Image 1 (cartoon, rainbow, N blue to C red):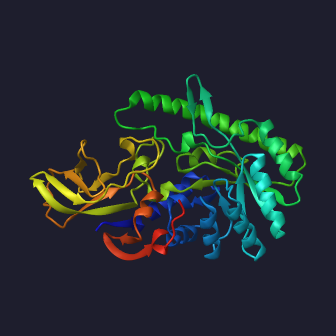
Image 2 (tube, rainbow, N blue to C red):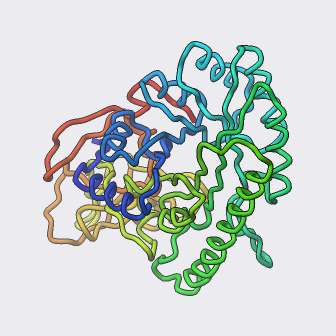
Image 3 (cartoon, rainbow, N blue to C red):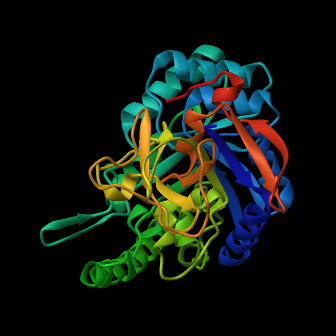
Length: 382
């Protein structure tokens, strides 16, 4: 200890839940939430509807291509000249095409320069903003600056005029629906407001996507290869749109702590980690070595890891989960001793893998194998 694990039985049940909620649509896997080549392969093999990877950096995409993965979409723009050159060089050498994400003319121009230099045509995906503004609140995340059909068409027209890049896809990520819980304990009023805003966001996202696709069709451009939408928290709504050809899922496979608080679905905690009890300063306190794996985002209690097993174990408010020690309060029936584990769950999904080189595979309550994370492969992308 500490070690991380994936429960294969729970992972399989989460896979089935994701398939059911996606309403028959193709599902692209968000690699940032998985960060293990073998786990990505397991999910892809689970069902033919799992097709393609949404990557989070260029080096990761190139590495996955070298491992035999195909249909790779960068979820985030790349602006570094050397990174764009590596994508173009990979394609020139006969590797699979990696679709670049763009949301402004500068992105297009930089991709053009790399494509022209290496004599290839690079595929692009335009990312549109699907957040909404209500009085006093920007409900969503700050991603793409493309907030209107007109702005999107201007960029698409710019791409259409190029000999070095081609438009292959459209993405709109309704993060305020997919990534925000609406059944958080002790927050009844906030939950009600979030649900109201989610319903409005779902309607507006569908309308904006449909309007843009209709406008693209009127331009007489070749049909898009894909229209990507959603995330784990919005699979069931994004997939209902007829123009959406694929939805993205990532966190739902592991189902970290933040995904315990959604009203419309329940997933199983398939991933976690164990920390070792090394001290017992009081009869009901067990101090573990390490464990302070806090998630990214705005700082708050919801970003802290949480004790998972034994049931009833809890962090201390004044210490939380620490860099070198994590005190745990426990008054339950299990007899805990020095050297025993406390099992924890990370608040987010793939970030856990940045702390560990290996994942133990668990099935039927026993270890049945292990695999490497990206870090275990000697890789660190962000």
